[in-house]
Length: 143
Image (cartoon, rainbow, N blue to C red; front, top):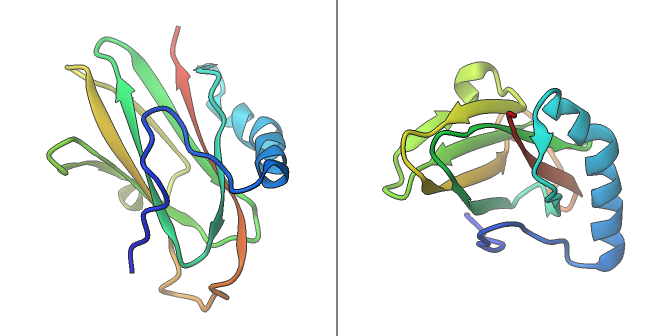
């Protein structure tokens, strides 16, 4: 069952300030270095997500700019499948084709709002559906 936690243009949020703070610290320490030479856009998109849930983020991107998207999770959580779709719901990228890579570099010909869908990969192993943890999505710009 697909559960849409929320749709936001610029960021998504955690359910409590404590969880949000812990997730933000995780994002800064573990995820931000994965941007490497890309400049972080300043938004910490983190959420405490249950294993059985998935989430979507709608975000505007501009033509002529090279982006890096990084998706990371706490180590005890199952791997994440993320897809990037355009407004017509056509899949532009699926990290499954790259061995479930945690990053994606891209540039658009036209400015548009993209949909990023995140879902835990749980088919091959049994995971407790009540288990949850921090999942973070960061964006960087190439300067």
